[in-house]
Structures are given as structure tokens and as C-alpha cells.
Amino acid sequence: MSRLPPVNKAIVFLGPEDCYGPCGCGMDMAILPVLVPKDWYLEECPPEVANDFFCMGEDFRRICGFTINNVFEYEMNGVEYFANFSCCRECAERAVNQGYAVWADRDYPMSLR
Image (cartoon, rainbow, N blue to C red; front, side, top):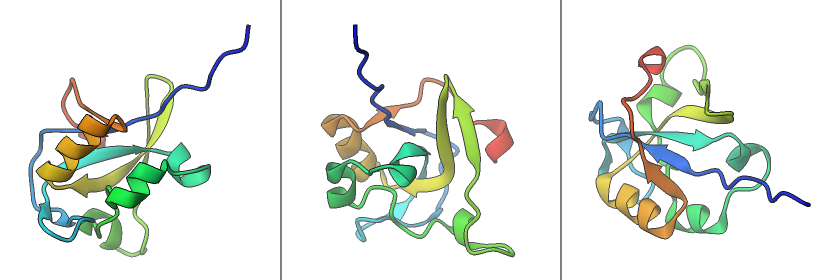
């Protein structure tokens, strides 16, 4: 029996809500933290994610500091994610409705704050 690879979805958190920078859609400020599947960057990003510019804004947490790429890896439930991504509420709702993201059922990981 062959197993299909798991569908990795971004995880959108309702908090801590803050202004993390411009949203990839260009219309609103990114205020919701998101964990993005590592596979989206190592293998292939789903086309709808790229079309919606989901989490493609300049999150201040990624671009500040001594490097230009402060991306942290985080493992949860056997899936590896990248942290320090964010989006506006409208993009989060669209991503969840289109099925490539889910709302978090827990708080944003304390180790990533």
C-alpha cells in the first residue's frame, strides 16, 4: 500500500498580535504570526501560496539583526516549520479558506518569541 505524502499547511496564530511589517498582499500590515512549512522553501511552494503572496512580506523579525535572514526552524508534530513569517488577517482567512493554512489550536511557541 502506498502512502501519499502529508499535506503540510501553514499554521496561523491569533497572537501575539503585533505589527510585524508589511503583508505580502501589500494592502495591510502583517499582524498575525505564522509558521510556514519548511518544505515550501526546500521543495516546492504550492502555486496558490505564491499567487496570493502569502507570508511574502518583509517581516521585521526576519530582516533585523546581524544577518539578513533570521529564520528559525521549529518542529511540531513531526513537521518542520520556519518561523518569523506573518500576514494580515484577510490573508490568513483566505489561506485557511483555500486549505493551505490552518488556525492554531495552541499559543505561539514561547521559544520563538
